Length: 133
Image (cartoon, rainbow, N blue to C red; front, side):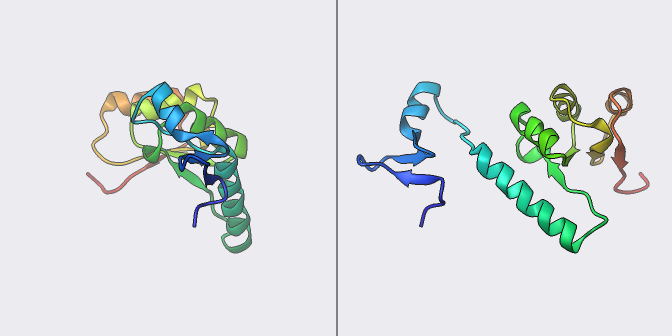
C-alpha cells in the first residue's frame, strides 16, 4: 500500500502529489530529494499533539543531520520546533533560515574552539555535552 501522497500513474510511473517522479529525476538529475512539505508539517503537528499530551515539559527537536536543507530549517522555524545541529555548517544554515537560535542545540563531541565560537556568536541556545572530555 502506498502512502496517501504517493500514486502510480497510467504509465506505471511513481508520482508524489501528482508530480511524476521520473520526469523530475530527468529534469534535475539524480540523486534527487523530493519531499512532501504538507506531510512533513502534518507529521510535526502529530508529534506536537502527542508531546503536549504525554510529555508536557518537553521540547521537540529536528535532528538536522538527517536532512540539512534550508527549506527544512524554514519549516522547523514556522512550526516552532527546535533544531539539533552537529556542525558549523548546520548552525549557519539554521541561522540563515531564520531559526530561533535559542532553540538550537549544538550536539556531539570533537568540537573545535572556532566551532564553539561560531555557535556562541550566532546565539545557539544550548550546548549538549556528552562527557567531561
